[in-house]
Length: 309
Image (cartoon, rainbow, N blue to C red; front, side, top):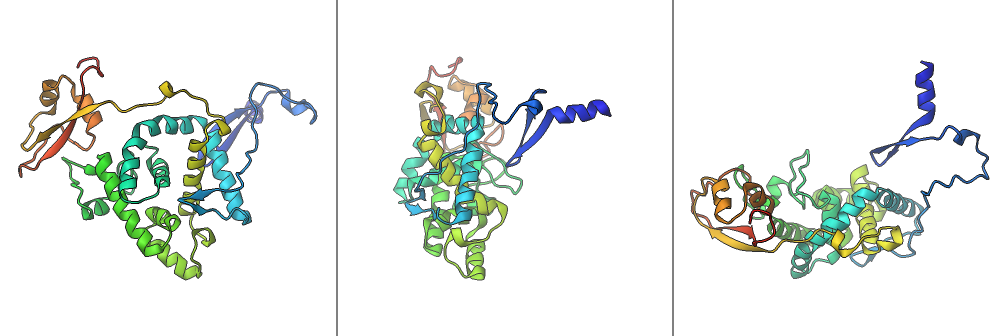
């Protein structure tokens, strides 16, 4: 028991936004005088909150104390969760060039690409509630907006098509709720949910609403990632262009029949099954059923980018 107590005195468990970190305390720390500085090459600094922050040109009211504190929290959490933030920089180089022109085509502010960042970490994530893909689209929303979703094909994993669906949803939310900030919040809580809360609390602004933990943090997380990813050097992130991930050039193959074996299909184009699925994650099984002779577009990487093609 004495050994356990001594161990607990040395090792502390710190929780930051659900992320648990073991912090090891030096045995001499407890004997150090306040004026003594422990110079171990790593220091933690408070962050200066910018005087002005906005989402889609809609300003955050940082003069409101709780808004300031909540913004401070998300900047701290995302700045000092360095590995995660650095991965966002790397993946953004790969996915933002696909997302940005689709947002622009629909007249949606470029800031909404950061909504995708916090929804999925720019991965084809799967949520406990059943949302899928980079935009975390639910089955009903996908089907209502023309996506094919079944065991064989799930177009929520198709980046271009799912971005189109996200845009339709966001435009509808903007028309219904009146601001881009509320439209973004509704992506998390639903149009009906945000409308109900606004009416119940007799306010008309996201930052005046009392919301649950997830939706209450939602906009602050988006703005924090926008701020950090727009100003990496300010927040201590250092990388070169070749550190980031890039898109591999592809060409399209149109198919309007069944494909009984994707392994054999991939080999016809000098790639393997894994590479085929990496470039076409919306193909969910080892074959394409396609009894209706529907046209599908399958992406094939150009030669020279994988060892076996």
